[in-house]
Structure formats: structure tokens, C-alpha cells
Length: 371
Image (cartoon, rainbow, N blue to C red; front, side, top):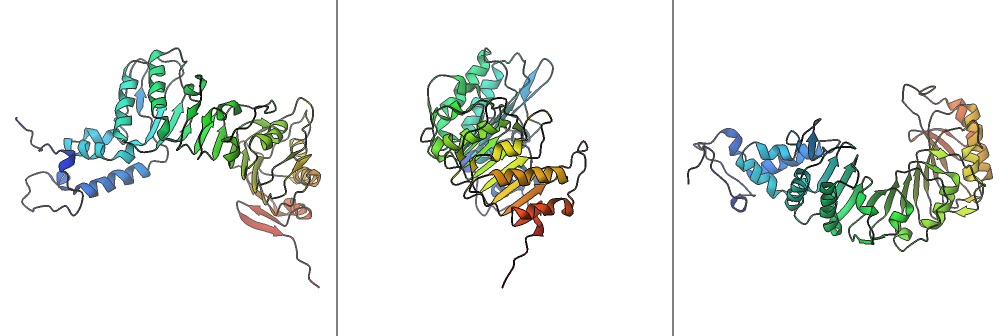
């Protein structure tokens, strides 16, 4: 068989330790790199990408593999690089699919996804799904079926997956982090290692689903948009939470919240928002809320004196609450009223907490009196 200028290398024939190169080696310098060094280079490049690239690219009427970005880019340089890249299962264990909401998908996506999954070997998978098209697309359903077939390898799943809308329950023994839309999605998973849940849909109604064994294992909860009533009811649905992050506290349009207890919560992150035409969200949230183990309250925003008074009033109505520190994370967006925190504005908080911090640095501390 005729060969090109660069000899074809088989993956199983590659030397992975102590590769040596002859000074008279006829190949170009790029092909003289030891395989293990080339693997390190590939891994450094992958780890240096802040936002993992989608496995596909698309135009107005076309769709193609994203060969302009790693790791697919590695497979286009030469046969050796392709063989080395395909042998590195860990660089294929992160799968991100970003699509426009309306797009005539073709068999290309399921074919590429099938190859990608094969290259990942048996490794645990991190899956990102963005801007998914309607489920009546047969090729998208085929791709979802491929992902379901690998559900025992799921470790981290981001995005509202259409697979969750299908009937039946799911066994995911390696799943640790799940992003989904509704609390009922969680109850359909048998996932003994699941500890982190992210809800990305607005939650306004009290959670009435019965908690499962999986729900009782959740330690970390993120709510993109939730009312105080939802946050209170989450204490029953996820009774062993240790951290809670809320991006937006929606106003309670119905009756006030019922008593709730987070018996293990040690850290809570809340936005600094006021609703002009509704009850103060901080006071409504902390009213009848028992937080016996809460140590740190992180507040995202730039408070003024009035907002600090609101936080003090909220902590005062909380029951069994002994927060040690309130930590402010100022917003640096151009649209905010100001981008800093004045110490004299936040010092009154020392009447209800021991320390006040800004971005983790203590700026005010309650004086300790000794006799």
C-alpha cells in the first residue's frame, strides 16, 4: 500500500513512555514529539479553554463539526495527531451541544455524537445542552436516545434535556450534578451520588412532590428564580441541604410562607433586590424560617443604608438564627447604582451578626468585651 510522506501510526503501536528521537529522523520536527509530550500539550490546551466549545458549528442553512476548536481540531493536523487524540478518552468526556432554537437538523448530529461517545471510552460524562430545538425533530430525538443509552456514565448534566420529558425513571449511578426545570424531574432519578441540583426555570408554586431517597442526598441547591414560599418548601423536599444559592427572589403573590427548618444549612447566597409593589422579599423569606446551623449569608449587590436596615429586620424575624458573617459581593455592572460598598453603611449589621465582609474580606467586626 502506498504511504504519504508521514508514516501511518497505529494507536496500539505508539510509545507512551520515554520516547526517544534520532537526530537523523527524516520526519518534520512536529512529528518528532514524543507521544506522551503530545498528550500533555493536548490536555493543557483543553484545560485552558474557559468555556468548552460546542461539538458542532452552524450557519444559516448548514451544520458541520466544530473542527476549528479542540479537541476536533487535533484530528485535522495529521494522522499521528488524529491517532493520539482518539486514544485520549478523557478529552472526549465533555460533550457540549449548542443549537439555534429552530434548525433543520440532519443525520450529521447523531453521527458525530455517536463517534464522540465512542472516543470517550468508558469515562464519566459531562454534558452541556443549549438552545435545544423542538422535540418533533427526529434527529434530535435520535441524539437524545444516544445520551440516554449512556446514562450510567453521566456525571454532570447541564441544560434542559428533552430526555427528561420522556416517561419512566432513570438510573444514573455516577451522576453528581444535575440542571433541570422542575422538582419532579429529580424524583425520576435513582442517583445515589447526586449531591447538587440547579433549577433554571422560575419556581413560583410551593413544592408538593414527595421527596425520594435521591432528594434526601442533595447537599447543594441553586434556584435561578424562586419565591419565598418555594424556598421554604424546599426545606422539606431537600432536608439535608448545606448550601443554597438564589439568583432572584420572586414576590409571593399568594399567602405567606409556612414555618420551615433547614437543619444543616451553613451557607446561603441571596440577591439584594426590592419589590416596590410587594412585601419586602428578605423579610418574607426569613419570617418563620429556622436556620440553626447557618454561619454565612452572602448578599449579591451594593447596599445602601435602607437596604441594610431591611437585612437587619429580616434577620431579626428569623428563628433560631445565629449567622456569624454577612458577606457582600458588589455588582460591577454598568447599570447598577454604584459599584462599591461603604463601611459606614454596613456597620449597623453588627447588631445581628459578628462580622461584615466584602468579597470575603472582613471590613467590620463586633467588639469583644472582656471583664
